[in-house]
Structures are given as C-alpha cells and as structure tokens.
Length: 496
Image 1 (cartoon, rainbow, N blue to C red):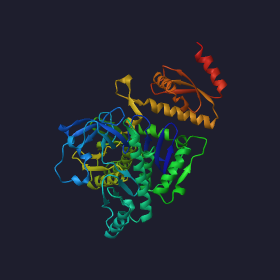
Image 2 (cartoon, one colour):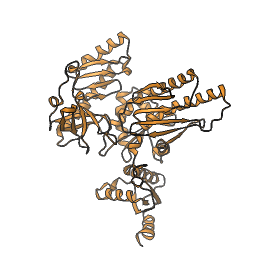
Image 3 (tube, one colour):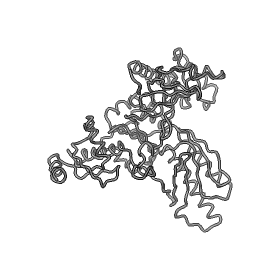
Image 4 (cartoon, rainbow, N blue to C red):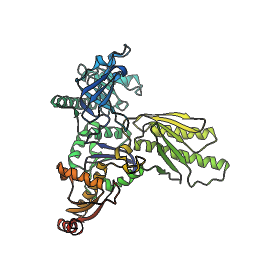
C-alpha cells in the first residue's frame, strides 16, 4: 500500500510510504532555504561573460547561479550561443525557477525557462509548441493528443505531453492545462506586486510535486492532518485524479499523524551510517566531497563455501541492491555513487545484481545511470543532484567536534519538540509544559519569543537551560495543567 502523509504542524512535512517503509521525505520550507521547482522574483546582481554566467539575487541570502543555456528558448537551438551579457543585464528583474538546490559548497542553480508540472502536462508559459513523450510510440495516439491540445493553447505558450497522458480524455487534459495556466497568471501577478526579490507562486508547490510523482507510481491513500491543507489538497486531487474522493483521508486521531506512523524513528534510521538488511547483513554509507561510497557486508552470514556461498552472497547483494535504491531516494543522495558489493564469481550472479539495481532505480523520479561494474568489482552509478540531501536538510556540522560529526539543525529540533508537545496536548489535554533545553535551543526559543513566534507553541511553555544536554537535545520534565507546571518551574528552577 502506497501512502502520502502530510502534516501542516510547524511547517509542511510530506512522507511517502510503501507498505510501511519510508520511501521519501520532503518539506515545504518556510525560511530562507530554497527548494527545486520553486519560482522566484529576482534581480540580476552580477554578470560574468568569462564563464557565460550571471548571479541573481532571489532574496534567500545567497545569490543563485544562472548559466547562459538557461536563458535560451528552443528557437535558438543550433545557432551560435550568444554572450550572457546579451541575455541579461545587472539590475534587470526576472522570474526564474530553481532547477538545483544549494548544497554546502554550491549556490542554488536557476533557469529563466519556467515550467509548471502537471500530472499529464508540463506547461511552458514562454515557449510555444507541443512536445510529446517518446514513450508514447503509437502514431495514432500521438496524433490524437496533438489534435486535442493544439486548439486549447494560446499564442506563445506550449506544453510537454507526459507519458501518463496516453489514453487520457481531452477534457481532463484541458482541465489540467487551465489549472496550470491559472497558476502562472498568479505567479505573474505576485511578481508584479513584489518590490524586493523573493519567492512567488503556490504555497503548496512541494505537496503538489509529491502528489504528481506518487500518483504516477500508483498512490492508494493521501492522509492529511491540517484542515486548511486538506481543503487545498482536495482541490489539487480533483485536477490530477478522477478518483480524488476515494484517495483523500483526514487524520482525526488524538495522536499526531507522524507519531502514529512512527516516522521520527524512520527518519533517525535514515540519518545513520549503518543500515541493517533483513538477512543479517548491513550497508555502510560514507560521504566525501567527491562521492558517496556504500559498502555491502554479509554480517552474520555463514556459508559452507562453494556454490552454496555464491548463492547466499548473490541473495545478499540482490537484497542490498533493492535497499540501496530506496536509501538513495530517501536520503536524496546525488552525484557519483560507488557500491562495493560482496564479491561474486559467476557473471550470471553479477548480471542479476546489476539488473535488480537498475530496475529499482527506475522507480525513482530522479534519473540515475548505472555505469557497470569495474575490474575491482565496484559498481559505479550517478544520480542527478536536484535537492539537498536529507542529512543536509535535517542536520548541521557539530561545532564541538570541528565539523567531524553532525547534529540536528536547530529548527528541526524545535519542530520535533513542538510536535511532541502537540501530541501531549492532544492525547493528555496538557495545557502547559516544563522543558529543559540545551544552551543552543534555549537561545533559539528565546529568539522566537522576541519575534512573536511563541504563538506557534501548542501549549504554555516554561523553559530552563540545561548545559549538560547535547546541542540538539531537550527534555520534557512535565506536561499537564498550567498551575502545576508553574509551581514546579518556580520551585525547582526559577528560585535558586
């Protein structure tokens, strides 16, 4: 069973699960971080003809990178490439789209060729023409789709017809096109009203993207916790799916949605270096600046040697290949990946493992390419880097160990505390809580209070700094009625 779980508590978090396993985790960022696919109103801050690039202020504290190819439309294909200084000038206002998120060492990459993704169509508001997926190979179907879409396009706009559009009736395609066109009109209006660079567009772009991808894989259920998000998602599903009503469910349990699905534990596992396999083996993930290296270990395997060993090792490697594909997607690992499978002797065994890896990677919307096995038995693959990794999104370098380890980001620790307190408020009708915080978290909570963000807490908070806690740790000492929380706070901590 494939489920999409969406929580609107302390920001939007989206979890994609298959048979209880966490497949993908995304967030709709509300701070300065940018996400792939988001649209921004920006201004050209600097033009560098020597590298055919420009840097654009998009209001996130870090100028985004724009290459000359991402300023050109299809009409310039085959012609001599112009200079970037002919395409953009310093101070020019632009509407741009993030194509690659920032990493620890690189700025976000953007394009002026904006596209809005639908389930069946990709809307190109500034590029005329119709392109049809090559995977739709039947000439009759290709002709039908073009004849259906051409009359509803206006001058100057175009679409890419996705593979999923095969067999879809014309009215549903027209409805999706109208929905995407309306979204673009909203983006333009927001950009016109903006005086400074910043994000424009739909507040739930991340949810919409996840919905499209999950529907393409055969989504069975969408569970939503927040009432406002529920109404918006219902409208989205009506456009993208004919059976929207049967898919959508509102979470009404006393326990918070992500607690009910035990997602925090699944996320913790996804941040660990070692991943267990069902047969007793395990994977080890090590990241360098250049690549990610994955080692496959047999663990508790005991073989008698010979053919029995070859079969057991191959079975372990096949299981590892499936888990590696899931982990690459869950951890959002991009770039070069090297896998050291357990040594196999027979070519048929090696081919079985490689074909399993390729098949499982093909389920991922982010493209991957397996480059084969080296003479040393190492499998090389590349996965397109679109978003920052899960580790970069949830953790940061630890100042106490000179950056050799990582801890949860401050906002992530606070989000988890808020979710835990919300669960206590709901399940135990708690009105107030006494909480011990590390020095780092104590300072962050204090900053929230000075900016008025304390209203985001689900109950009354009495806090105390506890230096013995790790930088990303907190401890809930009491949760219950306000009078008792205040009494305990004043008795044990406030009065010294």
